[in-house]
View 1 (cartoon, one colour):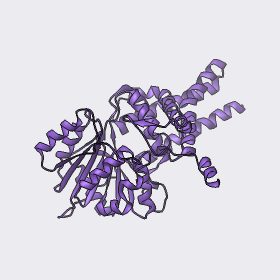
View 2 (cartoon, one colour):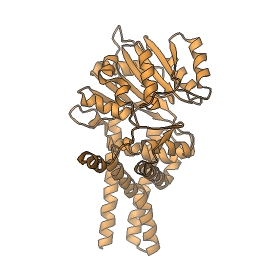
View 3 (cartoon, one colour):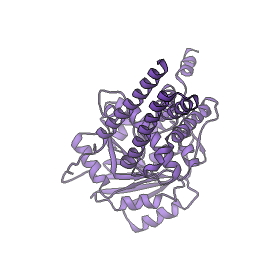
View 4 (cartoon, one colour):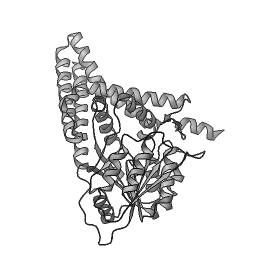
Length: 391
């Protein structure tokens, strides 16, 4: 009876988490409310850093060239690419006078590459507002009109979006919904958007702000040696008293970041610690992932092998509920086929393995590389930082 009670409580807890997560997701959906641009909207400079982005950059440029926003400047920064990225950018620049192409020719010491590229692009930008986008982000024609109007109407100083994540390959459909849903629960939008709450994150795939705010923060120079640039910039902005807002951008932007498991692993290892808010949070998130997405199937198999009929029935019902939930999640949130929901334990396992690998690489001093460069800014566990301070 004790075992049955424990299984029942465990099952109820996970189902409660699913219900809560559903409420969080539904409340976030549609948060980029419609607003009207003023008669004289600000000039916006969109800055896109691109390093070996031949696969994505044409789609990104075409989306921006098709914007219905009336006062637009586009600054593309070739970050020392060795593929066809510079040629593609040159072709577009020859066709559209609104486009500037900057070549970094490498980066100086003490800077991570993306921050230097964004800094270089901002130096060439002339807009009253700046918008940083990643090269794998494709804009709908109304992206800037919707976001600038929203930011002006709401008095937002830094607007960031969660776009529609295109799940093009099998491994994306297996892994990414698990990761993105977990992040939505860890970084709940209502807390990010609450000026009185300390929680602050941004998504580097889209960050929009007045140029005056960007300069007051010190721009990307202020986060030049951080492993990720978007989270620290958001924390700096909110900590300085500026209004940070994260909105649902699925209607106005789409992102296709990966095409295989190797790329997912590389991106996950890079972001493993900082994206979860620190070492302790990353460990907690990993443990929760194991308890919620892996343990139910393991426990079900154990109950079946042990011949425990009632626990097996309860756990079987839980697994069925999870499969249904993850199927609906893939359809509604990611516009992806629902069948990959049956692989949710595998997705959770891969996500946990990638996170643990990232933590191990940082703890062991092996560091992380991205696009052929070693990244600066390895975050330290709090206990190590305290020990250093004490000595």
